[in-house]
Image (tube, rainbow, N blue to C red; front, side):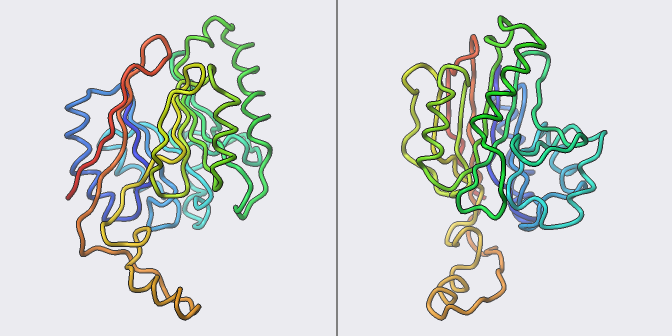
Length: 263
C-alpha cells in the first residue's frame, strides 16, 4: 500500500500551492490514499465544505483535524451523517454523527488523537481510548485481520514526552505514528524497538521568512511590546510544500520519503 501525508494546509495561498504541486507527486508515487490535515484549511478557522471539496478535487481522500477546527460555525456543517472524509480526534467528546476512525476495506485504519496539556479543551485519555478502539475492531474483524492492518495514528500534542510515550505504548501495533502541532519538524524519525515508525513532529506547509505563516514583523512587534496585533499571512516569500510518502508491505513500513518542494 502507498500513502501520501500532507500536514497543515493554511488558507487560500497554501490551498493553491497544494493544488498546483500535489498532482506531480500523485503521478510520481501513485498512492492508494492521500491524507492531509484540515484544521487551518479555511484561513486558521477550521475547514468549510467548499474548501474540503476543493482539496478533494485534487485527490485528497481523508482529512484529520485538531484543536482549531471549531473556530468557525461553518465547520459544523461538515459534520453530518453523509460526510466520510474529515476525521475528528478519537478522544474528543463523542457524538454519533462524527466519524472517529476510518477503516477502509479491512486494510487501512486511520486514527487521529489529541492530548490535553497546553490545549484549551479537556479530552479523554488517548492511550485508553485508542486501546479500547483496537479491542473493538479486533472483535469485529477478527484478530488475524487486525494484525494485518496498516494502522496510521496522527497524534496531536504539545509536549514531546507525551508523543514519545504514546508511540512506545503502541509500538508493534501501529504501522506509523507521527506527532503534530508544534510546527517544527524533528530530527528523530526512527523505527522503535519493535517495528513502528515514529517521528515527534511531521512539519507543515508554510511560507519561508514567516513565523508560523504570520508576517514576522507582526510577531516580533507583539513579542517586544506585549500588545496584540491582527495576524496577517506572509504571502511575499517562497512557499514550501511538504509531506511524506509511505509505502508499506505486510503492515510494516517498507519505504519513507520526505516530500519537499517550493513555489
